[in-house]
Image 1 (tube, rainbow, N blue to C red):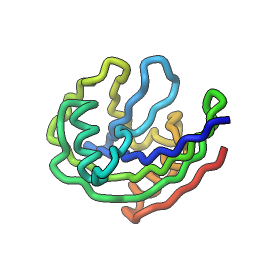
Image 2: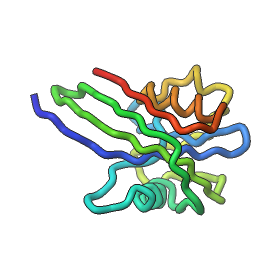
Image 3: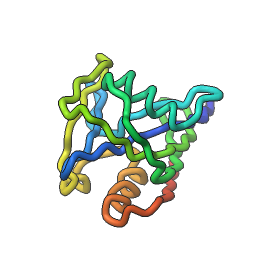
Length: 142
C-alpha cells in the first residue's frame, strides 16, 4: 500500500458569527480553505497563495493558531498529513470560488458542531480556539 506525507496550511476566516468553509462539489463534507505548502515555501506565504488561488483574494494578516496531525486511508493509500492552521483576515465578504471544483460557504459558528467537517480533530481544535483563543494541537488516527 503506497504512503504519502503532506504538509498543509488551513485558514480560519471569521466574519462576526460566521466562518468560511469550502466543499468539493462531489463531496458531502466541508473543510477549511487552504492547501499544500510547496517546497521551500514559508507557511505564511503558502496560506496567502492558497487563498488567492481559491477565492481570488489574499489575507491582510495571518496568525498561527494550531496544528493537527491526521492519518487517512484513501483508495488503498495511506496519507499522513500535518495541518498548520492560521487565522486569516480578509476584506472581501462576497466569496466566489476561483476553482471550478470548490464551493465556499459562510456557516454560523454556533452550528459548527453539527456540520460534517474534516478532519474531525481540526474541527474540534477550531471550535475550542474560537472559545478560548489558545493555540491547539490535535491528532487523528486511521
